[in-house]
Image (tube, rainbow, N blue to C red; front, top):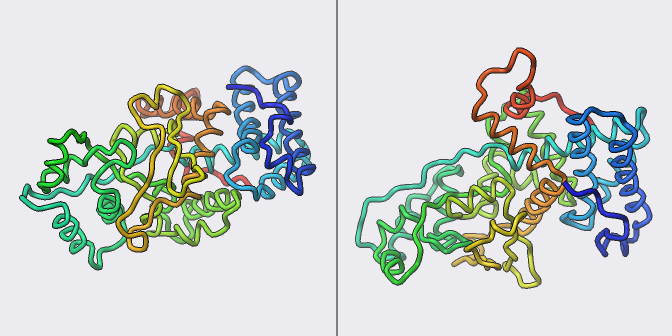
Length: 358
């Protein structure tokens, strides 16, 4: 994981910000913390690596913040820096963002099987009308979100334009498109903000505390109405989902790929943490909808926050650390007597973690 860049490499908008002195001062606190962890703290190797992840999450947020309203992050850092012991409080703040931001986007995802329809000789328009009829008065959940996203996205992955394997069986038009060379693949309905945030929340439960803390962290990114818009079943809002081919879906949920807005509305640069994740995939993706009011496009704010998480997780080393934990979870069912698998269990039961207060 690369060291934090010097102040001179902070984004131009920070250096030109009306509060640039205060923002840069907070970033210098992160640089000082990084130096202390490396040369003065006396940590063992594993402790040092974890502490570097924690401080670099804070530092790289300055370089990839999704809005210019960075005041909450600055305030968090300045407040932690004023506590005793100072560096411990700063590392706890880094852990706070690690648990309730990075791990949130990288936790294991479940999905609902794609809707199935018997083969028929319907046109694509007939298929749309059929699905619309099924959605009348239907509850808002993963399955209805999947169907609506398929209609909006033309029954295709928004990145590769591969036609959904299930839907093609029910549409002559989609079958003809396949014969004309359009790829076909299994697709999934991908949530930008994970549906796990609101899953299993009951009044007074630890999961309710966890969810409230997650929304508090997400709203620190300059958008204070996220919870209002995505609370409960609203996590399945159409502007929080999109249709992705299975491999793209997997890379999106592992923060390997992300969408960066361009000056053209709804046109995104398709980027990745490693160049090989872009092989065979387009450099730009333009999102479209047949009806912006009824079928709104993915929210650019949501995509920007996801992109921030992907970049910060990769640069800080957090993504690699979590990938290792997730691999261990696949092979570990029982907590080792010596506590050797405690980090695995720690990730597996995020919802029951003690809350860090900031």
